[in-house]
Image (tube, rainbow, N blue to C red):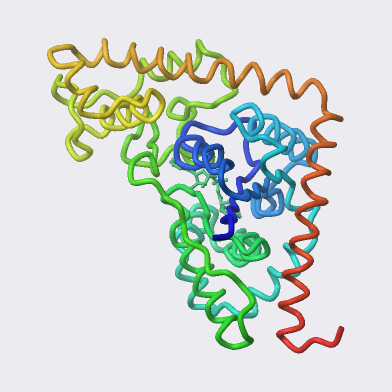
Length: 332
Ligand code: TYM
């Protein structure tokens, strides 16, 4: 049996990744490096669908690379690269746009959510075509598995549909990928608004745990997270969304089951529980933060690592694109 290919991507849209990114996706990126051929992409072109500052774009792309390495992505085991350094993404993106129906693209809930916030007049065309570029990211590498959080499920479905359609119409070209979405921790919620996902674009600053924030700031955010009614530490997303979210976070970081945590905190109040969750999070993130900050001191080294990844990615991507063009009947 041949070794399975993994691909995933993350946008460099914020100064730091958050705990939702880590638990929903990046933790699985790290785990899947072993035993798979993994390609991980910092999707800077996707970040252009929202207003960006050039200096911030550069800073955040490098901070993304530093965080990924700090939290366990090995550039020896995995191919870590920046999307804009592999031009085949845009090229296959166009082919995917020509495969997708307007109605189909219009049903993407992420587009609907984001565009309703921005307003129809200022929303960019790139936000609409975003999922087709994402499909290209995945299909270029013939990925079998795509580790992502729950919010990406619909984009993976679209990718599967587009790949299948292309293969049926033009002959076998793309592997049909499967999403790799955890049952628990696929959606980490905002600490202040625990029915909404933790998000760098929509969440409240106090509700988002950033990997690069100081331990003091993160501990305070957890201790002052939204309090549910009642006093028992029990998992019930409807009645206790805040406590359930904290239980999910503790469990995902410590490895303890939710049931074991409920037992441990039986008879104790929310305050005690939040204090312990704060300790677990801070202890887990502190070494990652230090390592990322250390890596950021040597930009040249980081850039060299990314160049090495892009060179390998381009070779694979060029092969797939060539097959796609050939199957389409373009004259080489
Ligand atoms: P992005 O950059 O918004 O998020 C990166 C990853 O983090 C996951 N995630 C979460 N998981 C659990 N709880 C949360 N609150 C939470 N917030 C974010 C996301 O599901 C994602 O896996 N469109 C993608 C980027 C992308 C991509 C790709 C992904 C572009 N091309 C190809 C996979 C394959 C996005 O915006 O992720």
